Amino acid sequence: MTALPPPHDKDVTLGVLVAELAGHLGVAGTVAVCLDLMAGADRTSYLPELEYLTGVRFEPGSPKLDPGRWKDYWGRHWGARGLLYVWADHAADAVVAGLDDEHWRPAETCLRVSTRRELGAAGPGATRLLGHRLPRVRAQALRTLGAAGDVEHVDAVRDRIDDVHPDVRRAAARALGRMAVRLDLDLEADR
Image 1 (cartoon, helix red, strand yellow):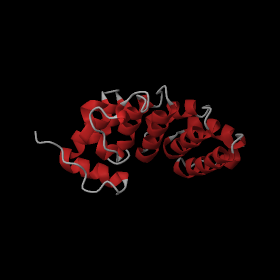
Image 2 (cartoon, rainbow, N blue to C red; image 1 turned 135 degrees about the vertical axis):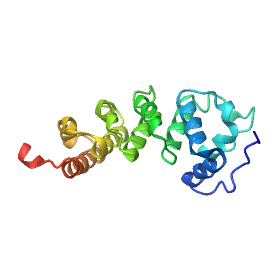
Image 3 (cartoon, rainbow, N blue to C red; image 1 turned 60 degrees about the vertical axis):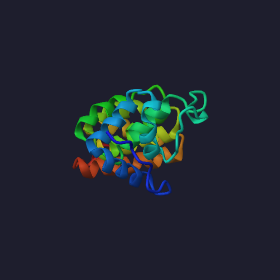
């Protein structure tokens, strides 16, 4: 296999970088890298790929690879984030499992992927994350449920209408509206 060349232009958006990586590895190969990183693969095994997935150059021995500076959860986050731009249906199980990541960043990123890919199987995990301490995670969980939740998630979304954080309250209102349209529900009659 030939060495992976550096990105043509690192100043482009992440989506363009990931598309360029997929141009080199194929979509299946890029998804495989993302899934491997999500599973906790050693980042040093993917230094050329990480340049595409992050826009950052990682040199062997660089302090950027020091686990004290870039914690292990970053690799899981970068892998999940790549799936916002490349996709294969077999990645869904790993994304749904990632909702239970011990760190909020990969879990939130898996919520974002679940929203974009409309993964109905993310409903239970997204519902659990409605109780997260960080408002940004709760708001993203609501966006996921708005995009992919089902009837059994309506009450959990409705409960967040009175959240202490205004961003979460707005996300709850939007999620309920989206669920009403998507699931053909009359939520006003249910109150």
